[in-house]
Length: 254
Image (tube, rainbow, N blue to C red; front, side, top):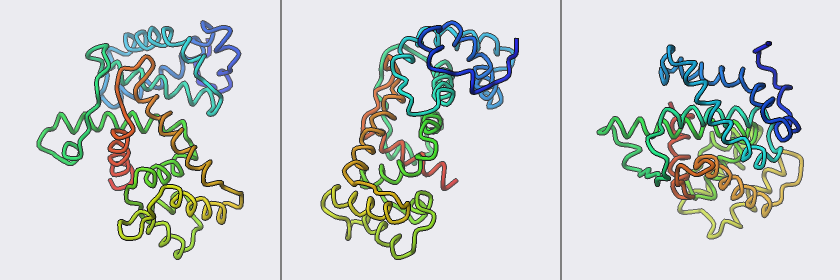
């Protein structure tokens, strides 16, 4: 059997009508994902086959949910990569089967007094990084919109990652949207300015209401992926805000 990874092996018909065949087609991707975590010392090399077996068992259990929830908004092989990565992380961290509230406090994020707390945050950031694979080229736009939605500070680099050709005067205007002294009173005003400048530089009309709805919808989708199906975590809109903050520090300021 050819065990090389081929994205064309992943199709929605096989997923929904022949799940056993689909699991077989997932085997190269499972080995790639497990191999990644062996390299990072999350799993021991001698445990590789046991881990692969455990991943398969959990994947088989989740196939009905995967088939129901996949909506075609991302490539199926990319979606499955996120699913399998999350299964690997949950195998490593699975201490119980009951949902537990994820408590990520700002003091915990910034404190180095408790090494275990730091490792916990790193694990959560890694989960978020994997989930962002689904957003592909829209990741930077989502992070910019999420920062405005959460009223977090927005930097020039945040803006340039989303709009590389933007002029300095427009950067100043967008930075000002997040500064306490100059931020508008409502999110509607913030997203109106952002949508206008996206329209200006992308050459396609961007409606501010649609942009804000997309931001909220994507926040909820990310929370859903973090919590899992069935839920093993209890992320909320507010705890995601803190995780995004730490993700940005780790990804862009390390």
